[in-house]
Length: 578
Image (cartoon, rainbow, N blue to C red; front, side, top):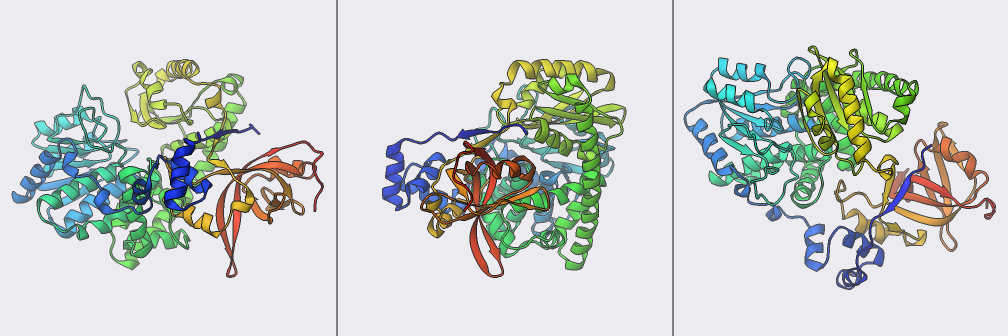
């Protein structure tokens, strides 16, 4: 077991905390949590706790938005065929379902949607896709969650009479943008839009918002699509602050009160019960939507998300459920093979990065496998497989290390690449793999710190167990939706003692009851932690725990439950069991 680093989020100035205690009538602990999230006064707290749609920015602040709306209006006025083109992952499929679904239901009928095949066409705007548009008389393509790196494809389309509006959120090459009618991407260097962390679906939503404003269409028709927007925000792991917080807040309200038929069927098929939150979307809905494109074709996912017939939606959900089961099997077997490759190679074990290639691996799960390898070895990882005579790969990173920049330094060995700080995709010639692996290892070894190679847990603050009560939990819960830049608060409680004996659950999970002097006992659960800690708990009875607070409901009873993240032990001379 690699010991985890406990990293404390910096404590804000005491005067800021004291001000929040006074103005909000909250505890010092709650005030500290708020101050850590850059809340400094009553008005900022009100905005944080009470998101409002008025907090959304004017979509016309985005570079090229006026051009985009005018070109869409022209296409509609002239009855041009419009092709809505999107990627095959959650962000791409929700983008297409949002943009195509809204136009089809409320604005315009002469349009189709197109999702590239992961295996035959690859990521982004494909040659097959633009040829389909040209051959079938489409005058306008609106690309969502892709296109910013498709300069040659967009040029080919333009030469063949097809215009492009690009809605993307990936990093552009600002010196080499595609020749599109409009490029909506808040990460453009020349875009002054106030928020640059939108998903592809979020950018598409802003495009629709602008169209509605220009054409006096009630936003009440657009808001029901926020359940798709929050699904994209959750699964694309973008920061949930600013505009994303507002979109997520109202998206979850929609998802919990009146979700679209397809998402409702998917929730039922996934066995999701109770109130939906970001975590349930990420782990319950995301893998199923992704599985369609990973295992077969993402059309299944889009058709599900567009369905308004309950029986049809349940059939689509069942098909996607089968895809997800297949994905799990591929995931398990390939992860085992990848880990064995590392374990059997001393050089790979001692490296600062992991780059693995197997031409037989399933392309649809290599990103997941990269994440699984990081869980074990905690270093930037790239998993490659063969695709159409090339090596295609997915990269994942560790906190604090920009894998996109590292790959960019290796671009002389690549055909193409794109992505984000913590996740990227790349394509290269198979004969370039060894040279790329060596260069990537050199770049990572030069840039990465020893601390970044150890797993870390970010801790908000120490907490006395006696502070955990209904009011504390109620206010903390109102800080949701939780996600990047507003993570679920994580606490430590020091020098806790066991109440009773530790319990193994299903051999690998851990359950203990703990207390501090003067406090009640609290139940703690640690998934997958029995092997690492059970034996030590038999002899060392005083320790520190790192955890998050949840409510456990069982047979009508509600109680606090501490979900363990880690345990650190003190000396074995602590008090014995009670």
